[in-house]
Image (cartoon, rainbow over all chains, first blue to last red; front, top):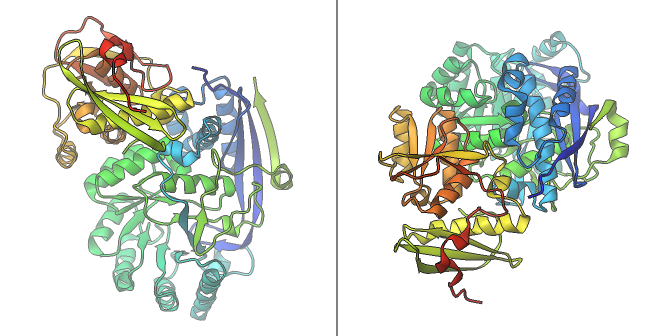
Amino acid sequence: MAALAISSIRLARVSIPLTMVHAGSMYVIQKTERTVVEMTLENGAAGLGETWGTPDVYALAQRFAKELLGKDALNRFAFRELLGKSTYDNRFGRNGLATLAGLDLAAWDAVARSLKMPLAELIGARRRESVDVVSTLPAAILPKAGTRKDLTDHLDVPANTKLVVEFALEQARKSGFRSFKLKSAAYSPEWDWKLLNELREALPQARIRFDPNANYGAATATELCRRLDPLGLEFFEDPTGELEGIARLKAAVKTPVATNMWVVKDEHLVPAIRRQAVDVVLGDLFMWGGIDAWRRMARVSHAYGLKPALHSVYETGIATVANLHIACALAEVHYPNDSGLHFLAADVVAEDLPVKNGAMALPAGAGLGVTLDRRKLGKVTLESVEIHV
Amino acid sequence: MAAPVSIAHTHVHSVRVGSGAEALVARVLSADGIAGFGFTLNLEAAVARDMAAWDALARAKGVPLHGLLGGSYRKAVNLVKDELPAIPPDWTALRKDILDGRHELLRIDPFAWGSVEMVQTIAAVAAAFDLGIALLAPNAHPWEIQYCAALAATIKGEDTKIISRKEIKEKEVSVPDQPGIGIDWPLEPSFSRIQWQR
């Protein structure tokens, strides 16, 4: 059997503007930085990957990429062993797993293209052709990126909630979104209470997830979520933390509780299962450290009655489509995918990836089914490097 | 759940193997004309069909089974005699027992559990709970041992091994690296005498 040896890896750190200011409890931003990965095999096939775009991750990606040259892309399991548990885990915190995930994704894509299979089939099966996606609703609609103080001043004016409701209605009109994620600044439970009631009234059939990124204390969050229970939200996403706080909150409410903060890697799963801490594991491909880790998470979650779902932030078409393949491949996934692609002012792939009727179509063809557009990539690249034998 | 391959035709035959036991051998013809084979000595045809679908896909792609499942953790698997009972194929009971801490090593007969996908799911749960997996070759037939080795390649953990009820001369088995699920079909002369339809 001819091994699919890795011959070169190209990395580009990109910065892509967002079409509007995005505010939550952890950030007020108007751009996203990502690292784009192109992995070429000796057979000529090339795969695309993507991961976080911080300088730390970009540097780590170069270091890991050197280790992977000459290795067999068919054996992605060996990547983790090769890079070493302490390397990807302890020493570099989440950066290690995220970096690994970006290279792992490029290898999955390169192998799927070599075997002439859609990525979904290589992960499991091509069970469906499209996936409902979630539109993020910023905690507030701000005119420009600014400080936390700018945000809280805005939130002190209750009438400003209507800007978020109007924005949600526009998303529903424009792209047929049926699923929304309201980011919360975790500044004012009264703002969140008022806004969620208004959203529910404006969009009575929509799925609405509510995400304060655990910046409410357990007591405040539990009181707020109890009041929100009758609204029939899709789930409370990290209403508080940590595992113990969220577990107590879950026991106190009827609405499902999700996390992408307290159950984010292999060894978090069993404690969460034992503690009955959450209903939904909103797994982020990059935090979990790659496709097989995400797939194992989905299987284990499902085995114990938890529901796996796909988390994402402001990612390019590469990671967005990777998440579509994972959702289509695994029977355990039922919730809509998080997706921020429609907020990016530019992309790096050639294909147009529209949201229609609230869903994104799984691209046709082998691998991810999308191709890098070098002209587009060039426009957003901050720095790039090629690593080869 | 079978492999993600479009299946044009399946056919199951009963054959007598050298030991005198009866085996079911399944052939799956994929839509693009590639044949794959699977077998079982427990007379449940579903597991043989699942195996044949994976064999057809892996042959069509020119890769061993582990090349379709994400990789391989080892090149050889330890083979040991073990007479303790295998876990009955009751997923509800097993999940509860794992949660209750009743297992350290999961003795799994892949022929009883029925599919590659099921074994992968058990393996994922075992990894999360830090449990070992021993794959049982129930009759210690060489085909069974080879199939267990193909599966064991994809199962994480130092404790992964193949067990059989009787002493076997070899202390380890190589993970098959040829395209397909890695069974050496000519080991049983009756295989070549099967009259396949079409």
